Image 1 (cartoon, rainbow, N blue to C red):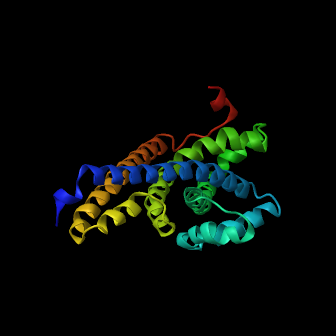
Image 2: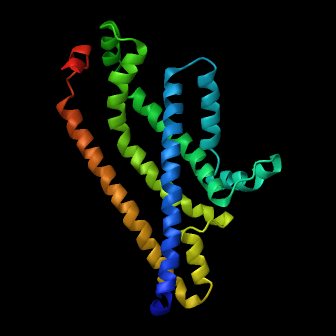
Image 3: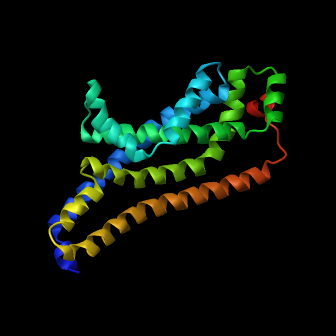
Length: 234
């Protein structure tokens, strides 16, 4: 093990550049997948005829496919039908498609977790379906969804390493290049990238636990409360 040779300034800068690419791809994918997955989850919750069934078929199909296959498809198969994507764009597209399907189920489950009594009380008080969804269901559901959504984001960050298969210059890709220079760099290099992944994911895990604890405490305090238009005005 050659820690000195593995941790030269050039190698560290090279790994840092790869880590920045990893974070860039992860952040963009997180934003896009949250927006798309949230929209799909809400549409499925609304149970719109035909559209809801079509979305269910698409979501279930994507959720039961390996992410690696989706990455291969976006980068190697799409050019066959005239859609050629750059490596980074292909990785972001694949991660967004896969994570959006996962997040849509989290969103839908969160919406379904709201007690029917609150919805019925809001509707009987004069709120429309959209008002009930906007003011009663979504605010509560979002708080309940935060912990599992953060956990899914952690998985997404780790899944960016799969893009090494299409030569995305992310952290794992750059680590393999350094490792190829000498077998003595293997353990030092992968120990360092493991530490980088751990620091980011552990921080997100702590955030998810804190949010879950806060949600549990808040739920216990408001267990007997019922949301009505009067509550909203207050």
